[in-house]
Image (cartoon, rainbow, N blue to C red; front, side, top):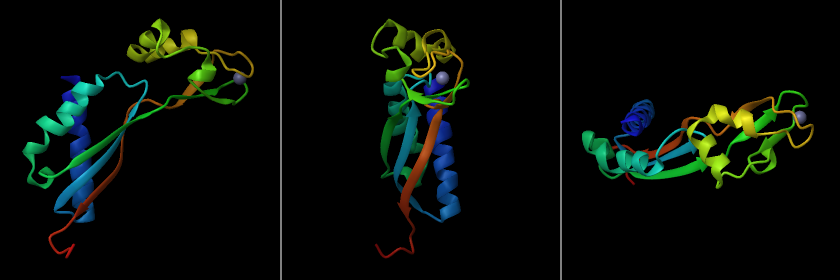
Length: 142
Ligand SMILES: [Zn+2]
């Protein structure tokens, strides 16, 4: 139920943002899922789109835009910023599969393309981000 819990927190954040913006209806929720986030995307999107919106009338007409945020590494030795393709592993292969499920393993596979160091920080590609919500209020003529 990991995916359901994550989807639930995304919707709670979206509704809280709707409150702040004075929106009575949320029409679109834009979410980014990090490439390294340990999640079953189909289950997450199903929870997001089919299971949870029924709990709140403001979400009756909502549409979701879920995209993947590519992973970005930053080398701790030379500050080079690099992506998965430059890190020396292929996410479609066995290594990528292992990394997808255990992000910490990326340290065993990734190498800085500039200096070869395996020591890096992950700048992007983890976690789930609520990027934006669109909606309208009752006072809104449109
Ligand atoms: Zn480096």
